[in-house]
Length: 198
Ligand SMILES: C[S@@+](CC[C@H](N)C(=O)[O-])C[C@H]1O[C@@H](n2cnc3c(N)ncnc32)[C@H](O)[C@@H]1O
Image (cartoon, rainbow, N blue to C red; front, side, top):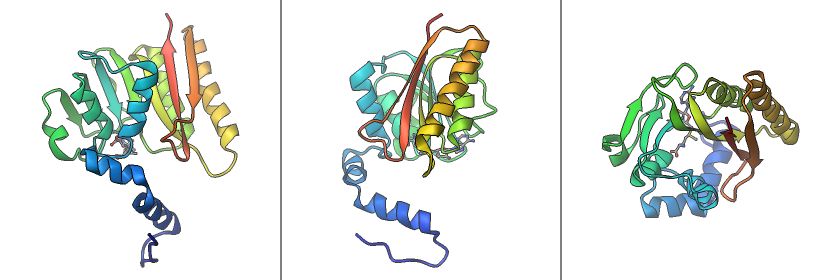
């Protein structure tokens, strides 16, 4: 499907829209009733690391429209969904979901949680800094996060983000594992997985 140039639409938003309309996983997500295509990434990760455990408490940063949050709640996970934007559909009413319409960078959980999930759209280094701080401070034990990489020097940016997280955890004397992977459903992004070992 081709998207005609519309007045007021930037080249990048036109490109994004065209890709969305032609992406079979966007259509499949709609068919399955998922809130967004992002849900597939979470399912692929769960196939690999089995992290979706009933009763766990997680924070989902950049949660709207609610694809990840909905998958989590469906598996009995208690979710604090942080996003200034609205959650769409029944996920907004789910008893396991608390939606906080606030800025993800200033939010701190009252009690430590098991997982920090982060799908905020922002510069990779800001996300890496956020994740490093959460794990160094012990706000979460593990984190899964997406880094939306720039068009140029993607590999350099990945290495920079890796160092930001390693440095934050080393400064806090936290032993950890950190892995960045491109998942099947990732487009211009990589998914990170970091775990505190002490
Ligand atoms: C790719 S979407 C997340 C999709 C979501 N994971 C899902 O499965 O539906 C990125 C989200 O980041 C949110 N966002 C951007 N800046 C933010 C911030 N500072 N704090 C919280 N959320 C933010 C946007 O509002 C947007 O909803």
